[in-house]
Length: 206
Image (cartoon, rainbow, N blue to C red; front, side, top):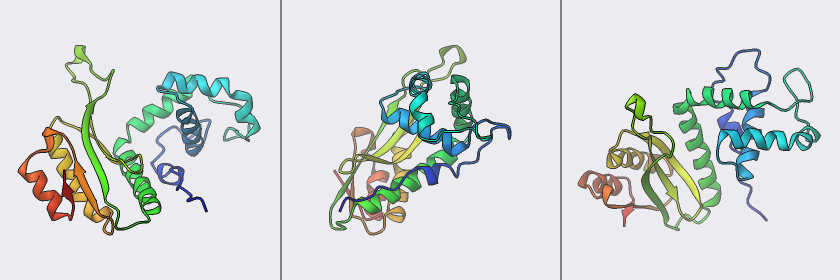
């Protein structure tokens, strides 16, 4: 019997929708269309909007409708507004995403004796540097579970990867109390405070 992976929609749709009350599409409907486009290989907002337009007929056949029941797919401006509003709720997004990831781990990690490897690393996001404003590129630190191909935690970092990793580690033991895990990472994480935190939470380091 195939294991059923929990859908992220029930988790992400709880993020407060701050769009105007007269917005054309439900919050959950927008998430669904974006997920479909991402799953088809779209990498940015423009490509997502183009994918939705290219699959206009197919989406309508699946029952896509506006809040008022019209058979219509969102235009590019609606997709951008969705992401602008989501960006203003990034903390809630990260919390909801982590809750979904935990649900997936608990379903997939059926062997409690199996050691899960949390590969924690930071990467600068391409295209986020704003030189004219004096803003550096956004540094995103993620903790990736290699065996499941799933990111458990992911947050924007102020530049200190070890500090952010320490924050994740302090959550692991509470989030996954019955799962054995170890932390893997590069030289940026080789600090005494990080190692002590891993051992305190019942993990191993490599």
